[in-house]
Amino acid sequence: MNATLQNIFPIYSVSDPQFKSYQLNNFRDIPQISRLTEQQQFDIEVVGNVLPFKANNYVIEQLIDWERVPNDPIFALTFPQRDMLQAGHYDEIATLLRNGADKATLKVAADRIRMQLNPHPAGQVDHNVPEMDGERLHGMQHKYRQTVLFFPSQGQTCHAYCTFCFRWPQFVGMSDIKFASREVEKLVSYVKQHPEVTDILFTGGDPMIMSAKNLAAYIEPLLSGDLPNLINIRIGTKALAYWPHKFVDDKDSGEMLALFRKVTDAGKQLAFMAHFNHPRELESDTVKQAIRNLREANVTIRTQSPVMRHINDDPALWAQMWEAQVKLGCIPYYMFLARDTGAQHYFSVPLVRAWEIFREAYQQVSGLARTVRGPSMSANPGKIQVLGVSQAGDEKVLVMRFLQGRNSDWVQRPFFAAYDEKACWIDELKPAFGAERFFFEEEMMEHYHEPQDANTVDDFE
Ligand SMILES: *Cc1c(COP(=O)(O)O)cnc(C)c1O
Ligand code: SF4
Image (cartoon, rainbow, N blue to C red; front, side):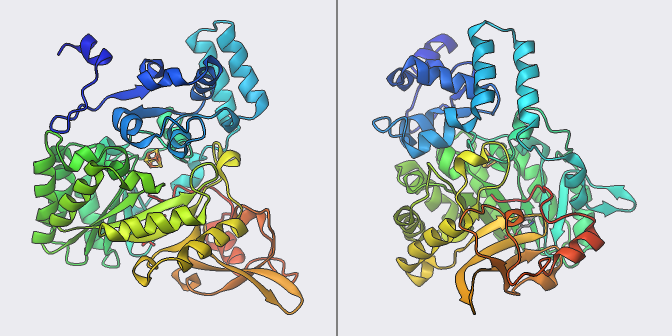
């Protein structure tokens, strides 16, 4: 079929899945989009000029419930929503579009708005970049003792973009952060020199955007590199939710699964940190087959997601999601809180509410699903879990703890914040009992020269 015909009649056959990508420039070609009013389509265009937007035929055909649009959660997850921009920002772009502004003018306005949406300041990101022989290893981060993050240069995009994603500056070409690294030899040397490292976590974007050949170029040197301390290779990915064909019937699916099997054959464990935001993402025949194929290739699948308004802020939904995961042989791992960047005001769930959602969902599931921990903030000092609301004497408090810490000695020490029903992030909380600071703040300033609310690029995939 020639390219033009393919645009009109995209192919969705199970045996030959054609990945078709939709972005700002062609989303009006999506057949289902005509269900939206002209105003709703214009809203997508306005917000999509500021925040990145990318969907694909699997998301459109299999995940979105078009009967429920615009209130469908998967629609809200992938298509920009009007209220993701503040009214002033919305009006500015809308006016430019109505007046037929050229691309360059739109970009200047969009970049100015983006700067106000708290993109990651590069200086702070620099902080977790490891060094070896006096050289900074861009494309890696080493924040928690056991685990090194690795950002393969070819894995820095995704099969679709989540509207809430904190990596949005990277996708709109705004980031001057040097994530990308082809330097797998340096990773091998670094892990050799750091016997405390047991885990390498490939992250992105989505490393599973890569072909089997490209991924093999990263994985195989780790297997043959004589790294006795390396136990786990982890891959943070949303491919199971956004393009499960990757592990079923893509051109190189077989080669990919064979590569995965090599990891356990070499005596290492391969774990997917699979990103699922909604139980519907676990329903299609393709995703179920993909999970079966991965498990047969000895891949352990652990699951994680942020809790977000408009998408999954409902305990019944979380209980259903964890149960569906366990039923398919996946292991629930983390519930995260949405971080403070981009359109966070639109998605954020207050800490207290997130804890209620977690608790109500957790109560409903078997112990095999209670491997999940949360709700957790990936903040600068570490991963901070909200254990819950309690009372100490006369004071209502929030009990918190570190699941991961800059200093591992902070982990598993409960600490207390003054109760605050509205707070959405650690920097909005005050210590309980009239204390000046949280126990870790002084050390944070002294050793890391950073306040607790500085931005970091943690992995939440
Ligand atoms: C979450 C995260 C990890 C992995 O932490 P685990 O609790 O072991 O899953 C590693 N590095 C960074 C920077 C992270 O944000
Ligand atoms: S949350 Fe993950 S899958 Fe979604 S856009 Fe961001 S990096 Fe990609």
